[in-house]
Length: 211
Image 1 (cartoon, rainbow, N blue to C red):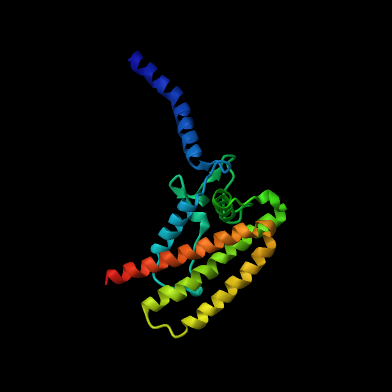
Image 2: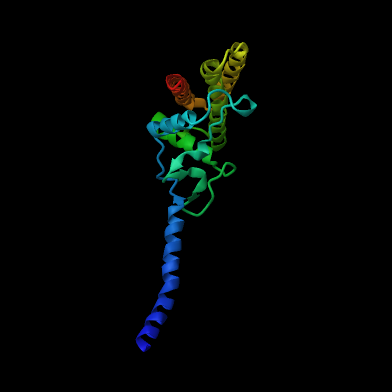
């Protein structure tokens, strides 16, 4: 009986330590080191393809095609669901936001973007300007490729023209905001456009083959 009692006391003494260790492991699992986080061109465009492929054909609510950079997968979870190594949340309204983090990581790793060539303000405005480019680019190709695949679209030409004007307008702003790094950001926008077009054409082809 004393043996059982002593084992029970030992268990009670060890339980808080075990729970604390478990809690620490869960905490670490929910954290990401932003300094070592890598976003390659391949992983980014694979994420883009998966996102577009899982959406219905055509424009969504508000005549938009949504794409949330904050859902970029890190350790099997969306980046916005994690915290920094210091325990700080990584949200849409954080500074930097989860969107800015993903975008700046791919620019640095695959396009040789150097933020120190710009002031902190211009660097932030440059990346925010690039984020704004996603909506008109996605909408433009959805109107050009996906909408006509659903049904006759008499208004598609005028809608696509409007989105093209928005792209041209935003690109002009980016060229100014990104300064000496504008050539690199323009290359990213070009690759983004090429990939969106390719992904949507493959999506439509696959949908037709399933009919």
